[in-house]
Length: 192
Image 1 (cartoon, rainbow, N blue to C red):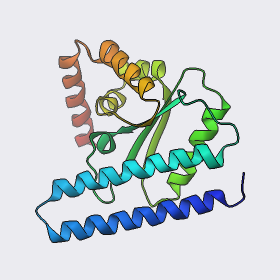
Image 2: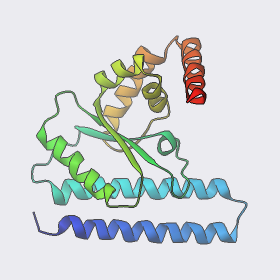
Image 3: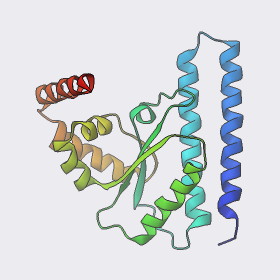
């Protein structure tokens, strides 16, 4: 792998982020009543940079390339809803096949290094579908996060299969229980 590739890719991503932010700000200044449009534009910009970072990591930063059906890049929270304020967090899930190997771990690590170089507040998790589903049954925060999940890049089928399993095993028939858990979570937050 070429020396300095990560620094070069990071510089390109930073320049693209800055140019995108400037263009969105210019458009918003011209039409200040279009806040939803600006939020959608920031989400689009974020998606494109996430895709570029993932592809650049795969093609230039890892020696052993995982297969195309090994990982899905999934947006959570505002990233999942496609609603982004200019400097809001970027919350991601790297959804992996159960038993994925070192090549997948290296791809995720290389992608994260590129994203950490951007001036973003980045939250992330790496999970397979079984682990995600199991954790979501007992953790309302994880459950809520995946309810707003959106496929961004990578293996879309892996994401679709996991979303279907999540709806079947975690969501189906548990609406009242979920609302109660969310209200209790809110109450705890208020007490703190």
